[in-house]
Length: 290
Ligand SMILES: [Fe+2]
Image 1 (tube, rainbow, N blue to C red):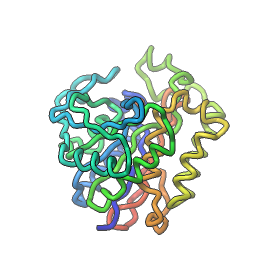
Image 2: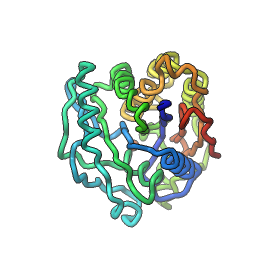
Image 3: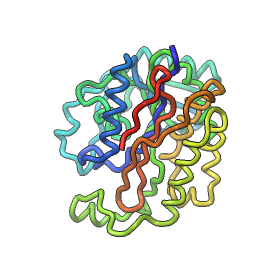
Image 4: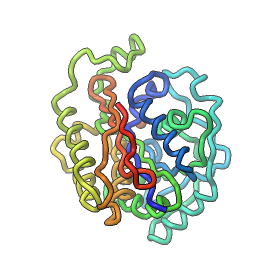
């Protein structure tokens, strides 16, 4: 089959689960589209789980629990049943090992909001079979790009590959008082900082103006951007962008339409939650949300 689309989603703060936004609408739209096209399963890399040394782990907990989500009423997530896809987890480990990765199962891992927030928003009625692949704590962009390229063949089998991190995500530079005082994560008492606007623009340009291997080079190179460390106080929320570049940046992907910015939500003044889609179901143009 034609390769499925790949998403890079910025999950933002935990309150993106509890509050409505154009990003939440776009996630739902992407989920509806996946179900309408016979989605087989989801393979995700998040931003909150990493393996040490040279390892990469694959979620193999048959009944994963959920780590709690701060500032969100439990009714929004406690009863949502997560669907661990163990056969696909085995398949991912085989692909990764064959490519030379030190991949291993983790049968104790509890899922975290970076992944299940997105799953609840995309698939509110039922979680599709899902596999989570960890990051590696050395945060090497090329390593994570290669993880994505190794799992890319799953796109030909109906799996949806998703990276969930952040376009601009520096918790040290967020403006927290409106959220802490009034639970208002979407307040923008001032415009975002120039550094945030500038880096956000670079992310958009890299994803929407490059295809194929050029996309891989553009995304991994962003870690050398002069404002990278301003935009990402830590590397964890950028690794899944590299993973997505690997999954969507093969020579075969050169013929795809360029990546699209489907929605964007600023939170906490300086956190930019951009939502991108590269490729489309059955080669058709996906509708782009607001
Ligand atoms: Fe996060």
